[in-house]
Image 1 (tube, rainbow, N blue to C red):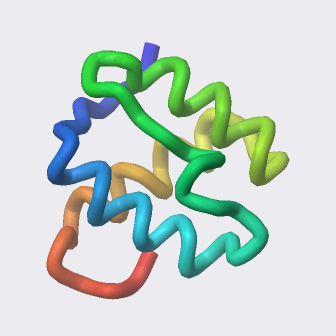
Image 2: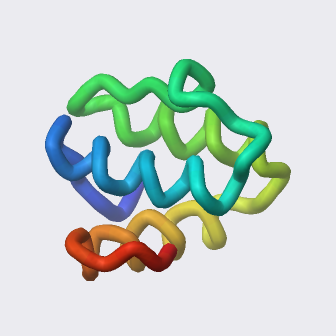
Length: 71
């Protein structure tokens, strides 16, 4: 189970950060439906070839500073 909760608004900001960091991804690759955080984590793990800890850390880091540009 994912250790964060996303809203559609928050995801849009986090998604922009992911797309900047992983330029080979497209917005369509990382679509998110509120309440399906676990599916998002699984999808991101496969796409960026990283483990759960890294994905959750990265999303939590992005959520901590939604106004900033850094991921």
